[in-house]
Amino acid sequence: MTCVIVGETDGIAPFQARFPQARHLSATEQPVWHAEPERLWVQSEEQVGTVPFARLVVVGEAALLCAALGCQMGRAGPLTDANHQTSRRGIFFLPGRPDEAAVERIAITIAHDLPPFVEREPPGPVGAVARLEPLAVAMVLGQPETTARDAELLGQVALTGPIAFCAPVKLAALAAIGAERPAPYPIQMDQEGA
Amino acid sequence: MSQDTELIVIGGGLQGLSTAFWAARAGLRVTVVEKSMPGRHASGFSAGGVRTLGRALPEIPLALAALDLWYDLPTLLDDDGGFVPSAQVRIAENDADMRSLRERVAVTDALGWTHEVLLDEAEVKTLLPAVAPHVVGGLVCRRDGFADPMRTTRAFLRAATRAGAVVRVGAGVAGLERVQGGWRVTLEDGSHLGAPRIVNAAGAWGRRIARMVGDDFPLGFNALMMMFTAPLPPFITQVALATGRPLSFKQVASGHVMIGGGPKGVADLDTGLTTLDVTRLAASARTALELFPVLKDVAILHAWAGIEAIMPDEIPVIGRSSRAEGIVHLCGFSGHGFALSPLTGRIAADLVLGRESPYPIEAFSPDRFVPGVDTDRPSGTMLQPAG
Ligand SMILES: Cc1cc2nc3c(=O)[nH]c(=O)nc-3n(C[C@H](O)[C@H](O)[C@H](O)COP(=O)(O)OP(=O)(O)OC[C@H]3O[C@@H](n4cnc5c(N)ncnc54)[C@H](O)[C@@H]3O)c2cc1C
Image (tube, rainbow over all chains, first blue to last red):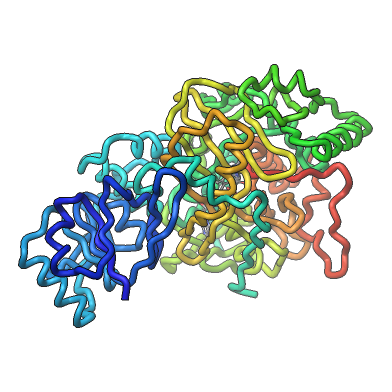
């Protein structure tokens, strides 16, 4: 079972002893720029690649990453239970540097594969959030990652679903894995009412 | 049943709102029922390309007339939708591309259309100084441009409302039933609305609505994906399209570069959500980089996808139902209905008012897909990227 721990160096440090087999992705060395169920997209200098995971611990400001993974979001970020587990089983979130007790709780939850117990927040004032143009979303994503920036983006997540990318990615690094002419993707057909 | 309104438009995307605008302006009492929010789907995620370049032949008269309306938008709507006249250029990367552009112009010239103009290598490189050295020519439509998707959607919403249309949000249609004098619409909350006429402008959900009235056409859907880079110093003012591979590409005033035109993710009609396909975005990034090396150090900030209705022949469904009286279908825009929307809403309004369309629309008939009929594309038909 692949366990991956993501975050700023001092945020992930407390996990190193408790999860020696886990893969530790430091936000400065290998930033995660996109996430899909069971895999993260990271960037190295020349090209992008994926890191698979079965269990994931996210430490620090990573609201967009958790949203991309389908975790239930509150107004301030991902919703978690007492074990720091998000609504997605096996995905954990800690907003800041964890203490020993938090690390231990996560370790026990992973060891026993405990289900999440996240309580939904009452729906926020989505009606008050204006839908942004794609360009405006890009402009907000281009700003430094702060709680205020993420709150604005989470407003859009509530309106239209996850926002990509979690972090900027070099176009050339992405292009490096691109096929010249991928086979056309087929038209999807709707079976409802057929 | 009593008629609450004279026309119910299903879908509050650009097509539905444009229809509501034109129909209300013509004096009809119009109600738009939108399952989510206006512009929630394709219209709000559009690349906003206003293109007459490379249109499927039956679309050319509509695209040209729609383009005139884009120039008139401030008069019509009190808002220009952010429309920027910029020209659109299709780039030939090799001799095969150039041959297909020449063939295209031969076809359009023969039909009397002169809006697409061939460019040789020197001309295309003068027009697009940042284009890659291997480019050998191009095709340009100088009056084309682009606009802002949400701004345009809101402009039509406001104008329709000013003209008297009522727009109900969070009002999904769950059923349609023929009753004396018209149609009874059942909404998802169980309430009902009645009207003699209905326009099906439900985008990728258009087939669901069609089936509710006993019609069917092979309307599928895809999640069309786009990207925006971080800002760069200005290097292109036109919208550029590739010829042999899908790409639409432009730089907006803020310096951000939009890349798209073909890559598809996965769409879910039931949740309304999309999943990006990173490997296909990568192919798009590669095409963009090969054509515009100036992108080599830029970062991508944003990628998104919108659910768009796609017909097998990539042209829309526009026309009256031949089975269900009072029903007009307006959907299936296949990645390029943003540009057409100022006009196609007007055509749909004409049809519900019992008028004939002043533009040829037979090719868009809801009945055109009869089993066994050959749907090969006519010569001169080009790859049409979203945008
Ligand atoms: C990423 C992307 C880029 C594009 N780029 C371009 C471009 O550059 N140029 C161009 O010309 N075109 C472009 N297009 C295509 C263009 O945006 C669409 O063709 C156009 O917006 C379609 O408008 P619509 O109103 O038919 O569909 P939509 O905007 O999808 O509206 C349909 C509406 O119907 C509603 N609905 C569905 N079911 C129900 C129901 N049961 N009851 C009530 N309401 C319902 C939906 O919620 C939705 O709001 C692009 C599309 C995408 C996705």
